Length: 90
Image (cartoon, rainbow, N blue to C red; front, side, top):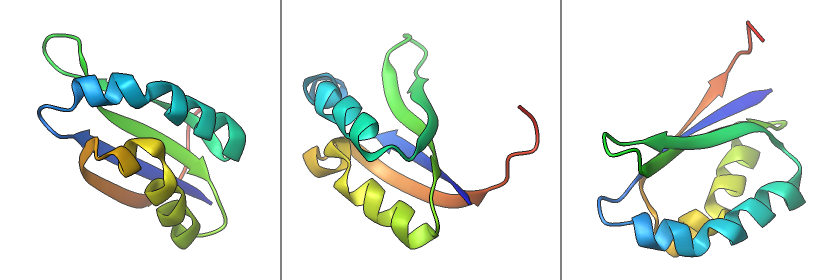
């Protein structure tokens, strides 16, 4: 199954996001479940959240993955929504 993580940063989290970015990218590479991902951008072109699509066996696994993400552990996110997602195109 696919799980979509819709993560919104805290309003003052850009510096923390940048400081934690390499650990986040290392986690993505190490876990091997991310199909694709990328940041949301605000009107200034700055990162302000993330869309992450995981290929996992359950939403519980997606929730565990999200909780272990260095961004989440560092407190970058204001909110994280996790939804089952169905790939139709692409």
